[in-house]
Amino acid sequence: MPAESGRPPERVDVVRVERFVRTRRPEFICCFLRRPRTSRESRVHCHQSCPPKELAYGKPQDVKLAPDGTVFYVADMVAGGVYVIDAATFKVLRFERTGKGAHGLYISRDSKRMFVTNRDEGSISVINLATGRPETKWILPGGGSPDMGNISADGKVLWLSGRYNNVVYAINATDGHLIATIPVGSGPHGLCVWPLPGQYSLGHTGILR
Image 1: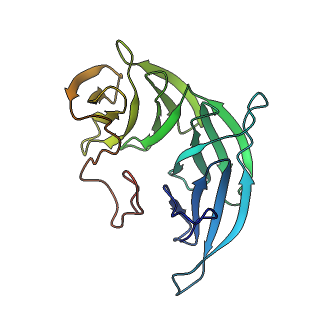
Image 2 (image 1 turned 90 degrees about the horizontal axis):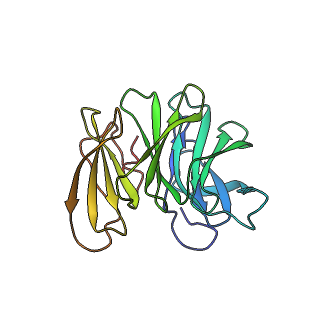
Protein backbone atom coordinates (compact mmCIF):
# COMPACT_ATOMS: atom_id res chain seq x y z
CA MET A 1 0.00 0.00 0.00
CA PRO A 2 2.12 2.92 -1.19
CA ALA A 3 2.00 6.17 0.71
CA GLU A 4 1.87 9.50 -1.10
CA SER A 5 5.56 10.03 -0.39
CA GLY A 6 6.45 6.66 -1.95
CA ARG A 7 7.28 5.17 1.45
CA PRO A 8 5.18 2.44 3.09
CA PRO A 9 2.94 3.62 5.92
CA GLU A 10 4.28 3.29 9.44
CA ARG A 11 1.00 2.88 11.29
CA VAL A 12 -2.37 1.64 10.21
CA ASP A 13 -5.66 0.61 11.76
CA VAL A 14 -8.71 -0.98 10.20
CA VAL A 15 -12.45 -0.41 10.48
CA ARG A 16 -15.55 -1.95 8.92
CA VAL A 17 -14.30 -5.39 7.94
CA GLU A 18 -11.03 -4.08 6.53
CA ARG A 19 -12.68 -1.82 3.93
CA PHE A 20 -11.17 1.36 5.28
CA VAL A 21 -7.50 1.63 6.12
CA ARG A 22 -5.94 4.67 7.74
CA THR A 23 -2.32 5.63 7.72
CA ARG A 24 -0.27 8.74 8.22
CA ARG A 25 2.42 10.89 6.68
CA PRO A 26 3.81 14.11 8.18
CA GLU A 27 1.20 16.91 8.16
CA PHE A 28 -1.60 14.73 6.79
CA ILE A 29 -3.99 12.04 7.96
CA CYS A 30 -4.84 9.86 4.96
CA CYS A 31 -7.60 7.34 4.39
CA PHE A 32 -7.53 4.40 2.03
CA LEU A 33 -10.33 2.31 0.58
CA ARG A 34 -9.61 -1.35 -0.13
CA ARG A 35 -10.74 -2.58 -3.53
CA PRO A 36 -12.59 -5.89 -3.00
CA ARG A 37 -10.71 -9.08 -3.91
CA THR A 38 -7.54 -7.22 -4.89
CA SER A 39 -4.48 -6.08 -3.06
CA ARG A 40 -4.60 -2.61 -4.62
CA GLU A 41 -5.44 0.42 -2.51
CA SER A 42 -7.00 3.69 -3.61
CA ARG A 43 -6.61 6.90 -1.61
CA VAL A 44 -10.02 8.46 -1.16
CA HIS A 45 -9.47 11.19 1.41
CA CYS A 46 -6.50 13.12 2.73
CA HIS A 47 -7.14 15.68 5.45
CA GLN A 48 -4.67 18.13 6.90
CA SER A 49 -4.18 17.23 10.53
CA CYS A 50 -5.51 20.64 11.62
CA PRO A 51 -3.00 21.39 14.39
CA PRO A 52 -3.79 24.00 17.03
CA LYS A 53 -3.61 27.57 15.71
CA GLU A 54 -0.22 28.28 17.24
CA LEU A 55 1.38 25.48 15.15
CA ALA A 56 2.29 25.63 11.47
CA TYR A 57 1.96 21.88 10.93
CA GLY A 58 1.24 18.57 12.62
CA LYS A 59 3.02 15.22 12.83
CA PRO A 60 0.51 12.37 13.29
CA GLN A 61 1.94 9.22 14.87
CA ASP A 62 0.07 6.25 16.30
CA VAL A 63 -3.51 5.49 15.21
CA LYS A 64 -6.13 3.48 17.10
CA LEU A 65 -9.75 2.70 16.34
CA ALA A 66 -12.12 3.10 19.31
CA PRO A 67 -13.52 -0.21 20.63
CA ASP A 68 -17.02 0.74 19.42
CA GLY A 69 -15.70 1.54 15.93
CA THR A 70 -17.09 5.09 15.84
CA VAL A 71 -13.94 7.20 15.96
CA PHE A 72 -10.20 7.07 15.31
CA TYR A 73 -7.69 8.45 17.78
CA VAL A 74 -4.54 9.90 16.18
CA ALA A 75 -1.58 10.97 18.32
CA ASP A 76 0.28 14.05 17.10
CA MET A 77 3.70 14.56 18.65
CA VAL A 78 4.07 18.16 17.45
CA ALA A 79 0.61 19.27 18.55
CA GLY A 80 1.03 17.44 21.87
CA GLY A 81 -2.24 15.56 21.92
CA VAL A 82 -4.78 13.35 20.21
CA TYR A 83 -7.19 14.08 17.34
CA VAL A 84 -10.61 12.45 17.50
CA ILE A 85 -11.83 11.64 13.97
CA ASP A 86 -15.23 10.34 12.88
CA ALA A 87 -14.67 6.85 11.43
CA ALA A 88 -17.56 7.18 8.97
CA THR A 89 -17.00 10.69 7.61
CA PHE A 90 -13.28 11.13 8.46
CA LYS A 91 -14.10 14.56 9.88
CA VAL A 92 -11.83 15.85 12.65
CA LEU A 93 -14.22 16.19 15.59
CA ARG A 94 -11.87 17.74 18.12
CA PHE A 95 -8.36 17.83 19.55
CA GLU A 96 -7.54 16.59 23.06
CA ARG A 97 -4.31 17.94 24.52
CA THR A 98 -2.34 15.29 26.45
CA GLY A 99 1.32 16.35 26.66
CA LYS A 100 4.53 17.09 24.78
CA GLY A 101 5.50 14.52 22.18
CA ALA A 102 2.25 12.49 22.20
CA HIS A 103 3.28 9.30 20.43
CA GLY A 104 1.95 5.83 21.30
CA LEU A 105 -1.70 4.79 21.90
CA TYR A 106 -2.57 1.61 23.83
CA ILE A 107 -6.04 0.42 24.81
CA SER A 108 -6.63 -1.38 28.11
CA ARG A 109 -7.74 -5.01 28.07
CA ASP A 110 -11.22 -4.05 29.30
CA SER A 111 -11.50 -1.42 26.51
CA LYS A 112 -12.35 1.29 29.03
CA ARG A 113 -9.19 3.38 28.87
CA MET A 114 -6.49 4.36 26.39
CA PHE A 115 -2.93 5.20 27.39
CA VAL A 116 -1.11 7.98 25.51
CA THR A 117 2.68 8.14 25.81
CA ASN A 118 3.92 11.71 25.98
CA ARG A 119 7.51 11.01 25.02
CA ASP A 120 8.93 14.51 25.36
CA GLU A 121 7.68 15.16 28.88
CA GLY A 122 8.02 11.73 30.51
CA SER A 123 4.33 11.12 31.14
CA ILE A 124 1.40 8.90 30.20
CA SER A 125 -2.09 10.38 29.77
CA VAL A 126 -5.12 8.19 30.42
CA ILE A 127 -8.15 8.75 28.18
CA ASN A 128 -11.57 7.56 29.31
CA LEU A 129 -12.97 5.82 26.23
CA ALA A 130 -16.57 6.34 27.40
CA THR A 131 -16.09 10.12 27.12
CA GLY A 132 -13.11 10.23 24.76
CA ARG A 133 -11.38 12.71 27.03
CA PRO A 134 -8.28 12.61 29.29
CA GLU A 135 -9.05 11.74 32.90
CA THR A 136 -5.59 11.68 34.51
CA LYS A 137 -1.87 11.85 33.79
CA TRP A 138 0.92 9.68 35.21
CA ILE A 139 4.38 11.26 35.57
CA LEU A 140 7.40 8.97 35.50
CA PRO A 141 9.60 9.55 38.58
CA GLY A 142 12.64 11.55 37.58
CA GLY A 143 11.34 12.03 34.04
CA GLY A 144 11.73 9.71 31.07
CA SER A 145 10.82 9.16 27.44
CA PRO A 146 7.94 6.64 27.23
CA ASP A 147 7.59 5.64 23.61
CA MET A 148 6.05 2.38 22.36
CA GLY A 149 4.87 -0.87 23.92
CA ASN A 150 1.60 -2.48 24.97
CA ILE A 151 -0.46 -4.03 27.75
CA SER A 152 0.38 -7.39 29.30
CA ALA A 153 -1.94 -10.32 28.56
CA ASP A 154 -3.51 -10.08 32.03
CA GLY A 155 -4.07 -6.33 31.61
CA LYS A 156 -2.08 -5.42 34.72
CA VAL A 157 1.16 -3.99 33.31
CA LEU A 158 1.81 -1.30 30.69
CA TRP A 159 5.19 -2.05 29.10
CA LEU A 160 6.90 0.88 27.33
CA SER A 161 10.31 1.54 25.83
CA GLY A 162 12.22 4.54 27.15
CA ARG A 163 13.51 5.91 23.84
CA TYR A 164 16.09 8.36 25.12
CA ASN A 165 16.79 6.78 28.50
CA ASN A 166 17.95 3.34 27.30
CA VAL A 167 15.43 1.52 29.46
CA VAL A 168 12.11 -0.32 29.42
CA TYR A 169 9.40 0.75 31.85
CA ALA A 170 6.95 -1.58 33.58
CA ILE A 171 4.01 0.53 34.79
CA ASN A 172 1.00 -0.51 36.83
CA ALA A 173 -1.93 -0.18 34.41
CA THR A 174 -4.38 0.56 37.22
CA ASP A 175 -2.78 3.39 39.18
CA GLY A 176 0.25 4.31 37.05
CA HIS A 177 2.99 3.63 39.58
CA LEU A 178 6.36 2.57 38.21
CA ILE A 179 6.96 -1.12 38.92
CA ALA A 180 10.39 -1.44 37.33
CA THR A 181 12.93 0.29 35.12
CA ILE A 182 14.95 -2.21 33.11
CA PRO A 183 18.23 -1.12 31.48
CA VAL A 184 18.54 -2.13 27.81
CA GLY A 185 20.56 -1.02 24.79
CA SER A 186 20.77 2.43 23.26
CA GLY A 187 17.64 4.03 21.80
CA PRO A 188 14.95 1.38 22.41
CA HIS A 189 11.95 2.06 20.18
CA GLY A 190 9.56 -0.75 19.26
CA LEU A 191 8.61 -3.15 22.03
CA CYS A 192 6.78 -6.43 21.38
CA VAL A 193 4.40 -7.51 24.14
CA TRP A 194 2.82 -10.91 23.54
CA PRO A 195 0.23 -12.39 23.35
CA LEU A 196 -2.19 -9.78 22.00
CA PRO A 197 -5.80 -10.07 20.82
CA GLY A 198 -6.14 -10.54 17.08
CA GLN A 199 -5.03 -12.85 14.29
CA TYR A 200 -3.29 -10.59 11.76
CA SER A 201 -0.54 -8.05 12.29
CA LEU A 202 -1.09 -4.78 10.43
CA GLY A 203 2.45 -3.63 11.05
CA HIS A 204 4.21 -1.54 13.68
CA THR A 205 3.85 -2.11 17.42
CA GLY A 206 0.87 -4.14 18.60
CA ILE A 207 -1.60 -3.32 15.83
CA LEU A 208 -3.48 -6.54 15.18
CA ARG A 209 -6.94 -7.55 13.99
